[in-house]
Length: 325
Image 1: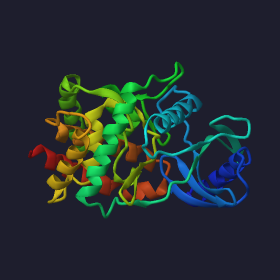
Image 2 (image 1 turned 135 degrees about the vertical axis):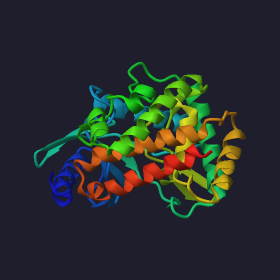
Image 3 (image 1 turned 135 degrees about the horizontal axis):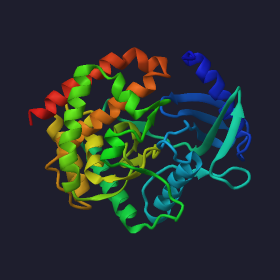
Image 4 (image 1 turned 90 degrees about the vertical axis):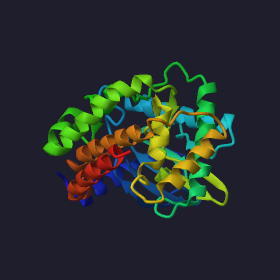
């Protein structure tokens, strides 16, 4: 495994090479995140932009990365056209394409650029009112998705039981089946129990459709009374209840969790109805998905490897918590 510093040195060169293909004046690159994708903020005379260096096989084995990212961008453009929701503005390359393939330092990656969105992420400082606003925005997003007809070449993840628990996804560079084998025995057994329970529940839960699929508080930017939705990289077709579960998942172990849950549901139900009987089951599903992703990413990212045992312990505690209710 390359050190984090060595990985970032390579990917920064890829990002710089990609920027040369976009109509953006030279400026300063600053690392934002090195997790699923590697992202940079670029500040220059033409404003601020988010440069995304995408990981191969991010959207499942055998899925064309370029088609998947261009499909995400097509949805972003449709949301902006059809609604007043604040979502990222894609920037086309000099030749008009929404993505480019860039090579540098022995790395070749698909890259894309979005306009930067200002505001505050409230992941560690949210109040119930922020969940109320997020629920309202989520409802509007789902309304738009239900009314929109994607283009014929639209390719996104299908968030079904096989995707969550089978061997479709690749996390880091590790196929999902190998991530399962890397789990500690107790974690593996508990996750298999969740898989068995969801195999019965998921076919009975109504309300599949296009979802963001990662709309937790870390992917919502608040500015005044407005909420902006970012990071659609996981978007695809799946249960709408999973969308709500993701939003409150990290708050589930707080003593004031009911206030946050109720605020999210109030905001969402102001737009559309949803049955939340199995909300805790979908929170458990999210915990499994997160841990598998984290386990795979830890094989190529030293920072993730250092925290992997802590994440496994958190998963067991979260499953204990939702099992009591």
